[in-house]
Image 1 (cartoon, rainbow, N blue to C red):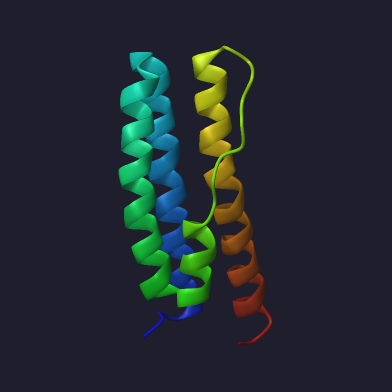
Image 2: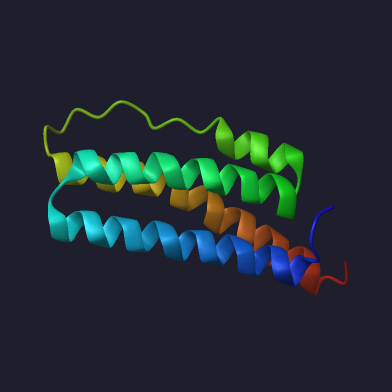
Length: 105
């Protein structure tokens, strides 16, 4: 059963914060292989959270996100692109849920 809107938004913002922390840790470590593995585990947890907290459809939509090809030969830039490909939809989802709750759900 989905949570109420304020809890949904809080859960999504928590996942954004976790993603940002993983990105920061990876940039400090300069180990993009390990960072990419951590992102994959984070994504799996996030899909489950979105599915249970928001909706199955939103969880499935997030699960289907795949990073596009990168041709920069700069591993940190490619990693940053990976982070953004997940961060952007989460920010949009949080904004949509926030608007929905403020419009008197």
